[in-house]
Image 1 (tube, helix red, strand yellow):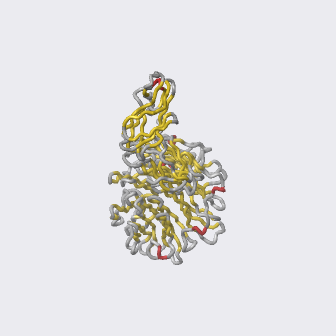
Image 2: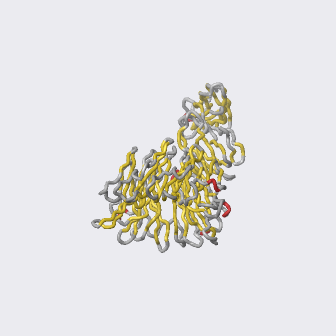
Image 3: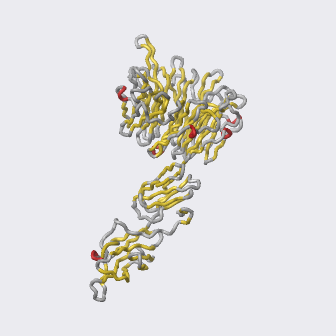
Amino acid sequence: MSRLQLEGRRAPARAPYVATGLALAALAVLQSCFGDHDSYRVHGTVSGLGSGSLVLQLNGAEQLSVDGDGEFVFATVLHRDDPYAVTLVARPDRTAATIERAAGEVADLGGGVAVVLEPGYAIGGSVSGLGGDTVRVALNGQVEMDVASDGSFAFPDWYPAGTPYSVSVVSPPAGRTVQLDGANGSVGTADVDGVRVRARQWHHADDPSDRLNVLSHDAYGVAVAASGDGDCVVAFQQHNGVSWGIYVAERRGGVWSIPDEATDKLDVGTDPTQQPVVAAAANGDVVVCWVQSVSGRGQTLYGAERRNGQWHRPASINEALSPVGGNVDAVDVKMVADGRTLVVWTQFDGVQRRLYSAEYVAGTWSVPASIQDAFSPAFADVSEFEFELGADGDSCVLWTRGVNSVAVGSTRLLLLSERRNGTWTHPAIDTPSLALTTEMEEIDLAMNDAGDVFASWSEFDGQRSRRLVSRGIGGTWQHPGSFADAVSPADSDSWGGQIVAHEDGSCTALYYLSDGRTRVAYAECSAEGVWTIPTSTGPFLSLGDRDVGDLVACSGPGGHLVVAWADEGRPNQLFVSERVRGAWVLPSGAIDARNAGATSVAGQRLAVDDRGNVFLATQEAPVVLDGFSADIFVAEYR
């Protein structure tokens, strides 16, 4: 492992080993041969040295060179009540040393000092994102060091096999947060080089010229997905002079590629398109889906995919994901690490609106063969849905069903469909609603890699709108039994928002709350199911003097939570609130707005990759509007 530079200087040689309370005992001495019963000389043995050499020091003064295993004796004469301490000044490279009976008082002398050597290994890894600043890290809360440049690093000592290690950040570089990967473990029989210290900060578009849509100033419907370690895809509609096409800008290996030719579009022909949705996998695969109004087919669902580094687009209007027979409405797409993909949409089958799906597994797509191949029950007219795809292929769909009959009246039920171990389970016609009443709206769903699922919605309790959450942990659901289980305060209206699942089984419910202004509030649920709920006076993530428009949120490794929200001002300004290592970092005022120059935000989307890099894609328009002009920008937390 290469050695780093510390504070601009080459790292010093391995520091001498100084025994501590791990092996402190009485030190043996050798009585003087001169008959003075109050005179002693320190002695001991060395093992594990082989043919090498080391240097010992007594009481910070006399140094003794020892060549090879065997006995040693210091020349310094000590008296009965004198203290003593033996330390290692030098030892062979790549060895770890233990000193038994290293310090004490002469009166406690025993069998002598025992210096034991064994193979030693480095503990370190790599640092990135410093940008010329310094991060201070610690090993096991004791050994601290400064790292002043990107690259490899190692703590200044060698450690024997079996040594537990825990690396922490003492002080991050100015203006950055730090993420640690591989920070805990035990030393094996090789150097530890997997500790990753990643200093991160936001990189925002500074100027309107940083837009991703270069063909025109007419771009809308932004979507974003992240994958791997810093790769990102932003999909959007853009007018290319002839039609509204579907385009993608990609960040690969730290470099952005931006579509600059009209023919770079993903869609088929020149028929009108709707805004795209996009998903990405850790292996670099990407799927973009969109609805296109095709003559003779109606609202039709299409998809383009990037597999093994190559984009594949539909060759004709016949290469659709949706079957012929009815208009497609809402659509969403999800992917997992190995590229498995699930697309879910609603489509009218001639009688009612039902759920359909297309799935990619191990190189093969399965799509509906006809309009009869819906996967939701035939009795259900689906109003809206949210869905998630788990790492093992399990899936969950939260959907609402409208029922109209003279006997029942006009009702709306909230239902779940789940796929576990490859088998779908759908609600029966008489399945009760998850919601407490028939007046629910603004549903949302989240799932973590362990398969824990969280469903959220707003519901009217007779006086005001409340936010409710159901939890599905280990295949068992816990639904609210009354409005006493709401995760929003009882004395304030709450609505909208998002539910976010965290890797440890906890979740965060974000929603809008009114204290005279529309504010962003949040409720936290621990992995054990215990909720921490705000009051009607907060805490809030948004500014006190601004009404909130739209919000989006995403969760990253280590509990990092990012919430992006736009106010309803003139112009609409973009802000970011973050929870980093358990503490919230909030904007202090308009000075913290993240807009790209003099623009007004009209929409934003967030994505986070497996390593914690975050991408915030926005649709922004000039403050002085020229027609329907709008541009696409991306901010990066890396």
